[in-house]
Image (tube, rainbow, N blue to C red):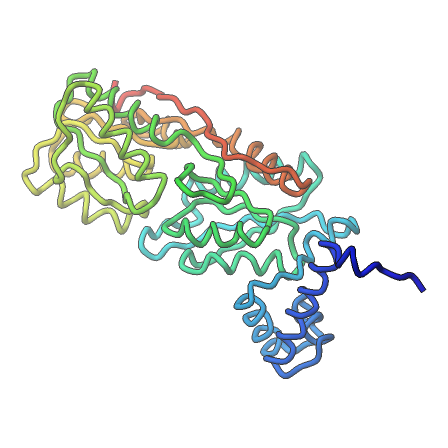
Amino acid sequence: MRKTSLAQGPTPASESTDRKRLQMADIARLAGVSVATVSRALSGSTLVNAETRERIQQLAQSLNYSINLGAQNLRLQKNLTVGVVVPYDAQSRQHISDPFFLSIIGSIADALTDHGYDMLLSRVDSERLDAASQLYDSGKVIGVIIIGQWRHHDQLNQLAARNMPLVVWGGELPQQLYCSVGGDNRNGGEQATAHLLRAGRKRIAFLGDTALPEVWLRREGYLRAHTAAGLPPPPPELQIPAPFEPDAAHPILEHLCTSGVAFDGVVACSDLLAIHMVQALRAHGRSVPGDVGVVGYDDMPLAAFCEPALTTVHQPVLEAGTELVAALLQLLNGVRALPRTLPVHMVVRASAP
């Protein structure tokens, strides 16, 4: 029998194994089941009934315990599936049918296919982003790509702290533990605003919910463009917290058009918002671009076919899928993946020449 010197003490690997066994035993004791049942439940086995499986998984999360079946399956070459999560945010109400979501999901799917991986698309409540970890903990996926930071930067940090392979589409933020990939939102907002200022627009409205990190960065660029032009910050009545979802944004846009607030330019944080702004302006007898110049954001295919064709900030959606997948593959190979900011540029069309 092999002997271990007491002077050497336990190795880091044995310490990790002992901790894992202790935690699994703790879960078993709290759940009133055997360790074997805990193991099966955490692996998603249907041999454990759904109610018990859910209770055990919740206990595991409360103890910050992960069986890391995703990594185990990768070593055994059993799993080549990546989870792509599109959170649902009740406040912004941005649907998965939004053209931007459809475009970036397609881009990610193409990049995963190029590398021989499958994609599992999932929708979770943005208030419970930790639900995305269940895909990984159960071994269904080997890593997760989340589209959007929403309002829960702290939850994303908690997921990353569990060493779950995670990449997020969004902007780089302070104290960020996870890898993000995103367009240069601050520069995009600045380019859009500077374009309108150069065209002689004096009072430019900003449309977007700045509680969302990407929109907050775009608003920072909007403010920076005014400073660069030697102008004071725009007044609060020109900074409109409009959500992405058109039906929810409609009354806000209507109010802007009827409130008597003077404006001759608009920077909207999505192409859909910009298109609905154009419609609202026309409904109230104002021409675009004659009376108001309108700039969108994303450069979705529909932007070129509007009437008038939409001036917009081009997001690198095709490149986004490649970069998101490349960053996740780095993490799966044990290499730290740093945040990546992709360049954006203006596409000038008829809505703001």
